Image (cartoon, rainbow, N blue to C red; front, side):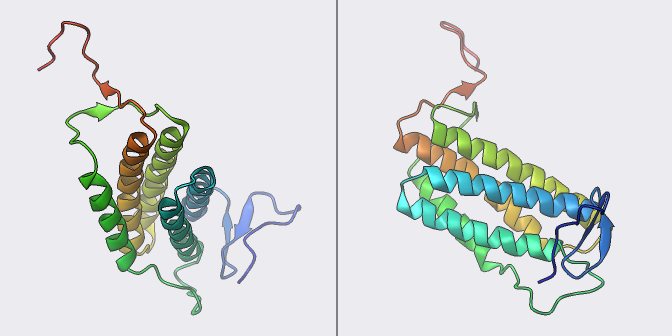
Length: 189
């Protein structure tokens, strides 16, 4: 695989995986850089959890994000044949995990404020980075070819992280604070 770092003398440019030189401010660099940031936050979340099932799922998500990063860090005009694909089945896995966790949670009829427990807060921070990564990939998609599977995966991943935050809140008995909050004696309905 080609290097994606720059040498000290390169001011403001980097190489994509297949050697194309682009500005560090290029939409493609922004997209794979934000995916890299997301991957790091998922690693942080995984490192702090001692629940094996979720650690396993988060590791699989990290592997999928690395695949997405590699696909986005490649000039679509100069494809690399050895790159893996992000299969549609990975979206189905996220949806299955969401369904399992949702079945264990009370219905949600309002917004919730992020927080209540460090694990829950890490999930919400990671979810917001995921949404930013999704927006960056969509911006790139408007000007260049991006696999629609990556966009759908990021969309479902942010939903997974939201539901995981709620599930961990239940696991660690964190209070879910809804918004807007009712004041004592106030009826918002």
